[in-house]
Image (tube, rainbow, N blue to C red):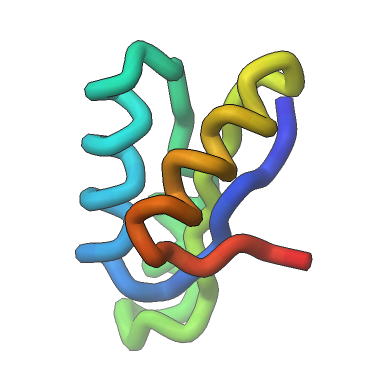
Length: 71
């Protein structure tokens, strides 16, 4: 599995997962329940991960839709 996106904006996470699933790429959002530790203030980012074999195509889909890609 490979991380393709990291953000604390829940709308970006929802948009990215909808794009990827729409293209048939399975993705998983990590750190969803970290708000329990941080007190629900949204400082800890969530990560979107995909299979390593699909990472290149997933990044291209996100880039084409103007979403940030980690370096």
